[in-house]
Amino acid sequence: KQEVTQIPAALSVPEGENLVLNCSFTDSAIYNLQWFRQDPGKGLTSLLLIQSSQREQTSGRLNASLDKSSGRSTLYIAASQPGDSATYLCAVMASGTYKYIFGTGTRLKVLA
Amino acid sequence: DAGVIQSPRHEVTEMGQEVTLRCKPISGHNSLFWYRQTMMRGLELLIYFNNNVPIDDSGMPEDRFSAKMPNASFSTLKIQPSEPRDSAVYFCASSPSQGSYEQYFGPGTRLTVT
Image (cartoon, rainbow over all chains, first blue to last red; front, side, top):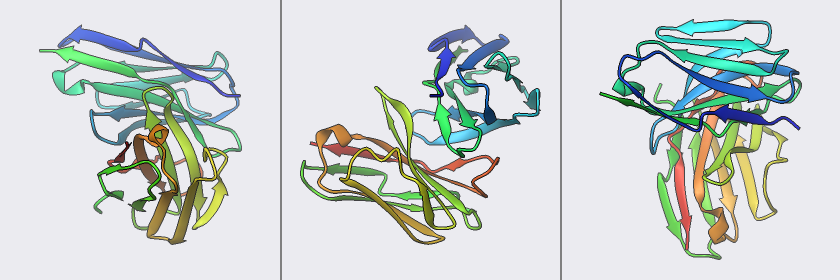
């Protein structure tokens, strides 16, 4: 059974820092991995989608990497801003299922 | 496009009552997903549809839960009878297909059962 873990559960950093959020999964047979952002009281917003054949994806200050063999993904946020404060969730779609299994998230707070 | 639309945004009901949550997916999207989010269990997939047909309902917790998608632009999630442990935020999401595409989430319905 696929399990997805995110570390740390919470993170507080000063504005301007570069930071890394971690996601690990137990079964490497995945279709893709997606990173989401969730603001308090809101739905999820897709940030980056990495196909199983890809190693990384970039969007602006965000870069996500995928290492299927080790069951890990990282989300790198460059030059963090207070507006980046949110909960970040990674989700793994297991091969052949079309279902996402979500991690429990990392709650990020960027201090001005 | 207005994105995924859910109603109501908040629902407070008494134990034993029937609750119906509604979702309108993004026009042209063929797949629709219902999720539940709680502090204890995180975000869980309840059921998903492809081309209006239920594909996987293994996440539906009990027979008290049912979901329908009568057409491509509307879906409902019904709980009858409701219980306090059903209190959660219920999200609907849609995707262009059930394959490898981003899922677009609605704002959610916060359900409180007293």
